Each structure stands twice: as structure tokens, then as C-alpha cells.
Image 1 (tube, helix red, strand yellow):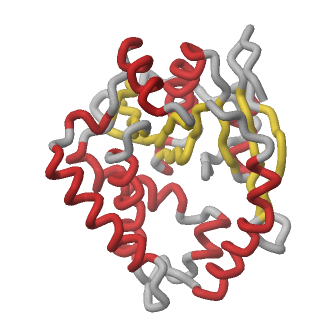
Image 2 (image 1 turned 30 degrees about the horizontal axis):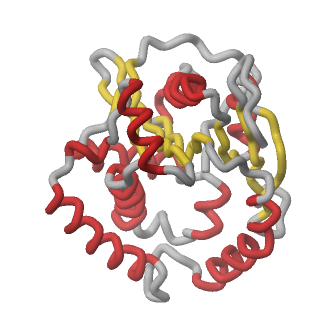
Length: 255
């Protein structure tokens, strides 16, 4: 889900530095995520009480970021500006049916697993906590979630999942989430975060897939992404994600 808002004007180039996130930065990233996605149609629909429960809303983004850091083929990257610190982040994953071979290949190319710096006991403890998080997030008493809307959302996803799956290649890079601090939008930060994944996808000659709200579509189109479908998750016109795909130049990516 990607909601970077863009206008028709071209974003000025930033001098942001993109690097892998550190575990101690999770809370700062969660604050950026909550601020960035607060007005997103999907969050507004599924979490109508987020304004009354800002702590829980921010914590939800922290859990998402922490989970990504503990996945083998997942990377959380941040964009930093001199004297201003972190102004955005993205969650990237490498989707494949051949995990071990891909890990070795990427490691040889210079991209190690983000999980390799996390001690084994810490990873096991997180896995146990993650199971509790999923259970509590789906509980009917969760103050953030509208249970009827959640049921409707999963119903819509299930009815369209086979159509979407048929359009996906077996190997690709996936942009799960990209968030830019509201005070630093329209400055090229999103483009820098996008460029990190494009660099690694191009190294492997693989496509990138993502889902975007209408407000983020211009950014991705300028970066060479094209629409290949629409995923409706509600009845209103803006309750849909554009399914978008990027193919590296001079690459014959399989479909």
C-alpha cells in the first residue's frame, strides 16, 4: 500500500541518503508511517477510530516494520537528510519460490539479509510475539478496527485473489509500503526510496510489483511503472488499488 501524494509539478531533487533501517529506529519510522497514512482511504475505512487511539495506530505501524525486519527476504530502508534525520522509509521484499538460492545470490551481489544482524533468540522471541499480535489485531475488541468492514475487506480480497495471482510472475521484487513524512513530501524522497528497490531489481533483471492509491500513481508512472490491474477493496470509487509493475530496461522479464 503506497500513498505518497504528488502533484503535476516535478519534485525537486533531494540529497537524501538511503540505507537499511536499524532496529532502534522502529518507533521513529512508525511515527512517520502513522502520519503519512492517516488520510489514506484504506486506513480511513478500516481504522475509523484511529484519531481517538493514536498510540494504538502508531503501534500497528511499528509492528509492521518490526515484522519486516525479521523476515528473511525483506528489507526496511530509510531516507535521511543532512541535519534533519530520517524523513521516510520503504519496506521491500523479494518474492520467490527458491528462497535459499536467492539469498545466496543476493549475498554474493552485496545485499545481505537484514535479519542476519538479529540474534537467534531475539528472532524466536519476536516470532512468538508476532503470533500474539496477529491474534490481537483481529480481535473484535481492537479499538482501531471496524469488524464489519474488516469482514467485508477480507471477502473482497478473497473474491479477487485468484485473478491477481494469475498476473504475478514467480520471481519479483515487491514494494509493500512507502511512507514519507508530510513535511517532506514533494521533495523527491519517495523517488529515492523507490530507486533503492529498482537498483536491486535491475541487478537481477526482475520486475517490481506494487499496489498504489490513486494519489501515488503519478510517482510510479514517472518511474516507469505501468498498470496491469485494479484491486477493489470496497464499493466506493476510491476504494481500490492500482496494481502496477516495473520492468528493468532491456530486460525480458517473464510474466
